[in-house]
Image 1 (cartoon, helix red, strand yellow):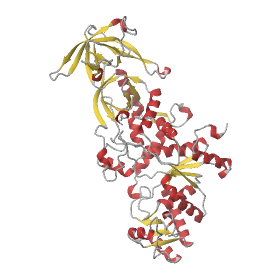
Image 2 (image 1 turned 30 degrees about the horizontal axis):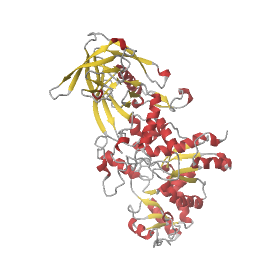
Image 3 (image 1 turned 135 degrees about the vertical axis):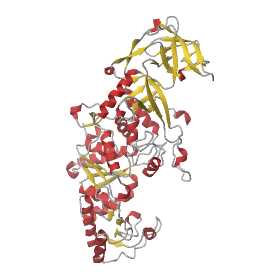
Image 4 (image 1 turned 120 degrees about the vertical axis):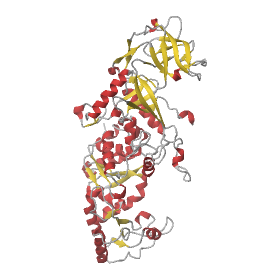
Length: 584
């Protein structure tokens, strides 16, 4: 079997295969995932993570986690730690943990080398003047009046910049390339700027910081990266990437570009996500409505759903918009096979079984997961007083309403057929209690002489566990909330993106939740790869949200870390059906 037979192919994977077959780098594959630690990772980053780590894993190579930390004003250790947690949670481990700041001295030394070879110069133009001199897409740029400084003067000025002798923004170091190039990135790009800002790792050691374009390729080279994979917006930066490698005579890493992941009904800009957090429109970076990986984890999205979703959408050279419904479908597909079933009533309506003996309690058997025989079954208490969902009752129901109605029958899931005999209402006319009778011959059997089509879920009132249930939905009400440049994207926030209600759970789910909380508090672990035996590989921490269940007939839910044994909190991961499809 050839390498191309083992995985779904894509053009970058084909490049790796061709390079290996040609013996390039002795067949070695070394990739890296290089986020800037200026925010939390979002769903779009998962595509790059799965691609970079997946290729290294498939071809027996290595993938580094490198933090491109060259912009100290926006970077924090909090973001570094969150990124590491996200990558681990998705199921990947890195060969080396690297930082662009690890290379600050080497980058500086290489900058002096470029100056000595008259390929870089110190420029006194301010930011606005630099933009004016740069030209446009249709007009060439003008050389800086400082472009012809001598090598000696440039070295002296650059060393003075390093020594902190000039004010912020007073000077820059620029590469001397081609001010008439049709590619604006080659018009003497900035390599260093003066910026007195405390760095999260190097503190105040450096009053100058290298630009991203200058840092990125050299960092790849220092790590012997064979395949530097980035998104399409960096395609026009590739000539500059290659220019630095060529002029410095260093390891020839190669850059390849792919289309980034864009999802509708959300925003991916870190600036806009930060605005949502800072302005209190969400509870934090890990709010389950956020498109962040940490938000998805808290919402109960399994890591496997991310990996399958990224595999489904593939790797292409064309930008486009992916429907979030596809991601939700992938969630359902993964959760359906792995989630135990439990009954929970989210809008309780009291039911009294008038012919059921007072004080009597029996138990009924229920299958934990019809998709997984090994999941076994559980026993659920049944008594005279129950709760059903208000939506499962209508007093004056239409003909095709197959749930409970006055004078009608319905089967209680895993239990008996009951008939509604009387409706008790409050002063406003709202039903608050149903008086029903039980057909005792219908436990595990169909009624004789009649058909009962409806089946509804329930919980025993005497045994129900109260819980706060957070019904999360899409954060925005339109497909492209930031498409209209004349309107603020916040205008399109979905006012129904979060509803908080009190639900009633079957007691087995309460036990599951307390056990999960204890495991998370004690530092419990689970296999890094889902379904993997512990001795097969590394482990990851157990999160409260790892308790994922299907509320029967309702949707998939997970335990929120806000929970305590005294007050359980569950988050809706995704509904059983796509309610948004009907709105289009």
